[in-house]
Figure: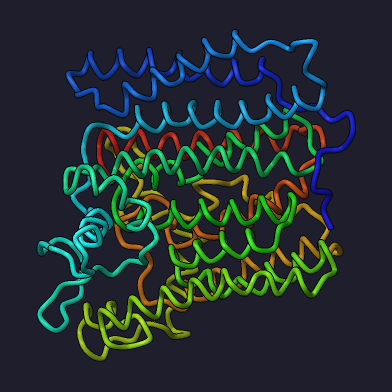
Length: 450
């Protein structure tokens, strides 16, 4: 099993580490504000909030001192927690500034949250929102977890709740959780920073978090809970918490329920205790009860009928014949090339994963003679199988959206395989990933899709 704590003597984050994150965020905020004002764009609430938060945290960091009354372990724990907050604040600034001022009209999760606040599950669905019509009511097609998280905000602001702002916050939390998870592996601080930068700005989680649409938020929330589950697996390994987070991930993307056996094996490997495995049952049962109850209330069925009601009768959802098309999106779809500046244009149908995030190739580095690496590979295979068999490829997207849900497992393999000290190849691949994703975000925000 992978060690759950950093090795003795490994570089851990200090207040100086957090200050660098926060200072970078403030510099980016200043430059971003200047560009937004110069171009006559609109500064949003989340722009201001994120900049104020980063500035406040930077100031706060200078009030924290290594008092002689604090033992080394307490200082290290405090600095670790502060670094996680600093990463969150830094990426909140980045995502807020690059999201633009538009709010996605595809706010099905907010509509669902508002409905739940008012004591029913049917939603007010305009024609442009994908929905199922059954027994005189309209129901959203997406899993319920994002709406559950939005309930407190919908209770206060109702339909004025910004799903885009919520998505930006969830995306920044995802990056902070990735930073936390990387700290579970025996890599040095520099490698941890590079891997976190890769996930936050070298993958399409950046695009998903800043778009704010219903499909995008679904993926972001699924990634968030999967990161929580994996952080717990490679951390303290508390069975009940692993199951709870894995259950919440499945209520964000239903096909992640198929990965549950991997979590069971990982927990068993950590403790070699059947009792610990049994502690996972309540979490999984909770997800099943919520899923079945919601479907019974909506469709009088144990299973979600929404997609079947939305598409034309007789539509085949899953089949081997869809594999070639999904492989083409995942592995071979390239940007369009023409004579218009900037000559290479992201297409609305998506781009291959290695043309947006080539550093994912580093997931092949760890030794697959070790069982944890094998289990992560199996989790990836299980996670992509329903997507590969699905009739849709993600439609309007940058990158290959349907595969975002397996990113956390790929990140674990990268952390397992990266040298303790970063090598040149890793830096080059991560740098290339950041360039590709930043180019795509810039192109889509300024010119739209090609």
